[in-house]
Image: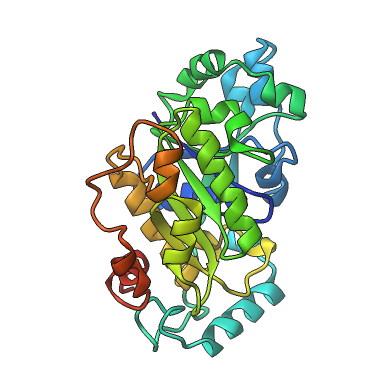
Length: 311
């Protein structure tokens, strides 16, 4: 089972990224589950999950692993009609090349309705002591209980520095989520440095809430890893998450689909670039191709087009 951690500062969108990535991976054919390791229980709250036990209960021997998993039904009947209508209206009015992923005439309509599906959600920890006090080796041993049921586990690492989360230590790779906001980028940079010093393999940065004027090269230069995905800014509300399920034809949903495809094909290579590589770690990510300033500065050309696709 592959474990992929999703880290980022508060408000960067790591919960939405982890949730949509897990759903998109299932759509792509992976037996994926999502672990909510956020102390606020963001995913469990967002999906209104009723769970009988947490991963911590499994670690202490008080519960079985399967008791910490809730199969959440994703149903179109539960989507708020007013939010959905407003979102579709906003998408129809936004015809920029960036938002449409290469097709100005793409329109998301009522015909773009999701299929009913389920998402396995693992409840993680209820307080910081449980979270930071977890032994990574014990956690890895417990996660082996899920190997027969799932081939991918996506982890929302939760609030606080990523390097302090035991889930980082058991992950094959970590995605850092940021927005173009300078404070969010600096927080992501600190996470990258800490994870690098801890020996964590970084897959790259997911640039969330990106707009027409967003410079992807500025984000990657600041954060210190290559861009792994770009999620466009839009008007969706939390009630519509996961948007990959609720509005599958939207630009954001398409972006999460591409993120899932790239995750499935990731070969384990580190995405560190520039100074972040020099600050620590033994794998500078050489040989990945791309990543130079000349290539990244033209955000309207090949680099950004490759991330956005031609949906």
